[in-house]
Image (cartoon, rainbow, N blue to C red):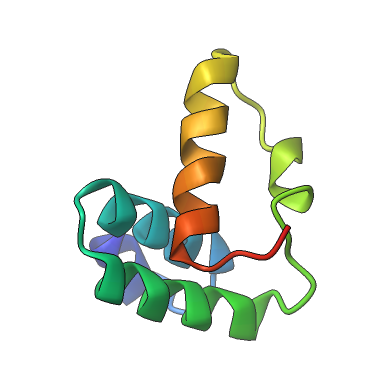
Length: 75
């Protein structure tokens, strides 16, 4: 996600992925900072709006969504 953000800094997807990754690594301060950056680019985003992300495994999507919630994504 960090490399992708260097190439395309205005793409909110990479910031969302970074927030989830930091959260899953236990780096909550960095996760919240990445989430703040994501929400600045996608101000209406919620946990419900990220459920449109295609996922083959529903458990993975739930884990991703939970990480985003912990990082500060509103419900």
